[in-house]
Amino acid sequence: MPNTVSSNENYPDITKSDELYARAQKIMTPVTQTLAKGPGQYTKGVSPKYVKRAKGSHIWDVDGNEYLDFQMGIGPISLGYAYERVDNAIKAQLEDGITFSMMHELEVELSELIHEIIPNAESIRISKTGADVCSAAVRVSRAFTGRDKVLCCGYHGWHDWYIGTTSRDKGIPQETKDLTAAFEYNNLDSLKALLDENVACVILEPFIFDAPKDNFLHEVERLCKENGTLLIFDEMWTGFRVAVGGAQEYFGITPDLAVYSKAFANGMPIALLTGRRDVMELFEQDVFFFTTFGGEALSMAAAIATIAEMREKNVPARLAEQGKKLKDGYNEIAAELGLTQYTKCYGYDCRSIVTFDPSAGNGMELKAFMQQELFKRGIMWGGFHNMCFSHSDEDVAYTLATYREVLPLLKEAIEAGDVAARLLGEPVEAVFRKVTNAAPAKAK
Image 1: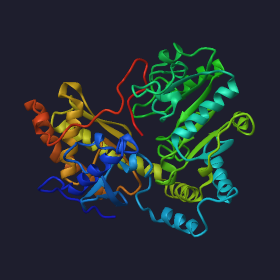
Image 2: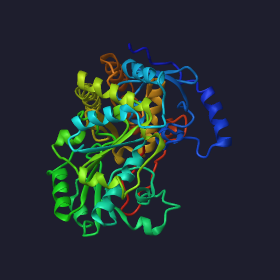
Image 3: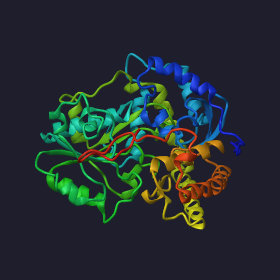
Image 4: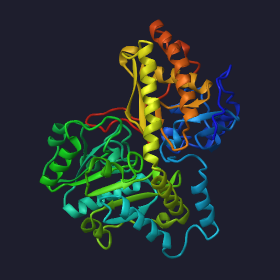
C-alpha cells in the first residue's frame, strides 16, 4: 500500500487512548497482556496506547492517527497486516469450522510442510505460544537425558524454569530457580563454567542482534554433544525470517530440538516444536504435552498460506533488502551529523536495533525522545526495525527522510545536555532488571 503518513505540525491527539487506559486501570492489573506492547514501552503522555486497525505496514490508533509501523505486532507480522492471501485462507477455513472433536487434516498437512523445510524436523508438535513449546522442549530434554539442569541464553517465556533467572521471579520456588542458569552470548567460557554432567539441555536464541563470533554456535553444538546435553534453538525471532528454514538453515547447524512461533502464521497464534524423533517419541507415553487448542484450524491454515508466500516470493531476502537500507541509512545519517559515538543501528538486516551509548546520556530518555519525535511524524517505533514483506520502497524512503529530520534534534539535545527537559512525557521503562547470572533484558 502507498505510504500516506506525513510529518505533522502537532503531536498525536491521544484522547481516546487515554480514556481507554483510564477504564482499563480500574479492572486490569497490569493493563497489558504482554509487556512489550504496554504503555511502559512508549513515551508516556505522548504516545498512543491502543490501536484500532492495521493494513500492510500501516497501523491506526483509536483516535484515528495513522502510523508506519516497525513493531509488527512485536514479531508475528512477517508479511503485513491483513495480508490478503493469509486472510483468505483463514476465511475459507472459518466456513468449515475452527476447533473440532477429532484431529484435523491440516495438522498432517502443516507437519509435512514443516518436515520439508526445517532441517531438524524429524518429528513435529503443534501448540499455541512460544513459552509452551520452550517449556515442552525443556521437559522432554530432562526426560531423555535423565538430568535436571538447564542453561539458557536469551528470552524464553514466562514459565517457572526460565523466568526465575530474572528480577520478576516472585512466586517461583528456590529449588526451581537453582536448576536454571544463564550464560552469555558469544562467551564460550561462560557456558563451559556451567556445563556439567547434570545439564539436560542448553537453550539459546541463535542470535538476537549480535552475530556469532569465533564459530560460537558451532562450538556450543560441539560442547553439548561432548557432554551428552541436548541443544535447543529458540527460533521465535530467527525462524522464517533469516531464512525460511530459520537459523538452522542459515548457519548450517541441526540442533536436537527447535522451537518456533511469531513469524510463520503472520499474526495467528501458533507455535512449533521440532526435533529428533528418538527424543520426540517420549511424548507418546512418558512426557505430557497436550493442549485443546493445539489443533485449532484457522492458525494452521494461516501458517500454510504464510509459508507458501514466503517460499514463492523469497520473503527473507526482501526483509533483508529493505532492512539493510534502513540500518545502513540510519548509520550514514548519524555519521554525517557526527553522532556515531552516540548512536548506531546494528543487527541482522531483517531485524535491527537502534542503540545509544551511555556517553550520550540516559538511554531510556534518549529512546523516549526519538520515539516522541517519530510518532509526531507518523512512525510507530520502539527502537527496532522489525521488517515485514509489506514495507515498501516508499516506506523506507520516508523513514530515512524522517531520521534526517529527527537525528539533528537528538544531536542538539545531547550537546545541550537537556534530553529529559525536551520530553513531553515520561521515559520508557525496562522490562527486567538485570540480576546475578540473569538472562538479558528482553520482552515478547
